[in-house]
Image 1 (cartoon, rainbow, N blue to C red):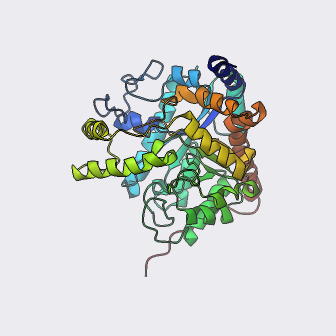
Image 2 (cartoon, rainbow, N blue to C red):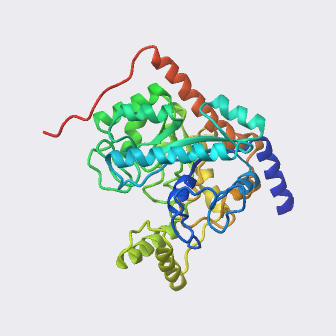
Length: 405
């Protein structure tokens, strides 16, 4: 079979079993501006300036025509705010992120539809629209308040990543100094309350100790909204094999990410050097402003950037399937949340290239349907079922973090 025929086969499969993507940072790009250097600055939710009904490839990884071309049937929009936002500032910024997702759904009703449940996702697929769900990226967004957690759920947030890049008062992050050895007692109560309301516990970004603690506590399936296999690329943002092996008993889903520095070992080393180059010039290592990106490009000219591709991601999925099983893997691209993307997976139109690569490796259509659609829908449905059961045995938790002595 030719490459073109294989790509047509992949597109046909996605027409029937579209992608549920676990993580897209379009709301942050609409707030702050794109990570792409061509972007001239902040957008601040000016949806006319970034009309995603039109081609936005000069500025964004995401627009509706490319979501359609990529076979995306459901998207968890990240309502992320930076982890240096703290307290009420983090909460209010998260609310603003939630609001822009609502604006997008209202602005493009022929293409996007609000989804709160697994049934809503299936209904959107039947209707030919893209189910739009939300995930809060980092427990700093609730400001240590379980009431705020419940409020986010009522506003439509269906997962929360327990941490972002920084360790918080009740959970250790993968990319910061540990303070708790995983989850604190309050952190475990956060997981229990998420189970009670039906919010998926997302373990991307958290330390391996936090992953294990959450899996030990959670009565509902967990997800990793955008993490790959640590055995394939040894980066702390990825999932160790012992944790992947726990997913079948939990029912959870690990959604492989496309971020090159998390999936390609050579890119890990390059990124460390590139980050240090930014810091040495007075920039934060995550800065994606035009000035910072110009420094990145100059660095890249001196030291070419290793480039991942669809095969790189497929290597992770092969390994994750072998360890966790086909029922426990998915896809979380992290588009518009990264400065660089793999070749062939440059933007949200690229998913057929990944499916074609997996078809070439002998993945069956039944297995691919689980990867793209069924596993993520099932995890949310199971979380809903657990919540219904817990509602009969416990009420809302009003736990607080004990005061420091």
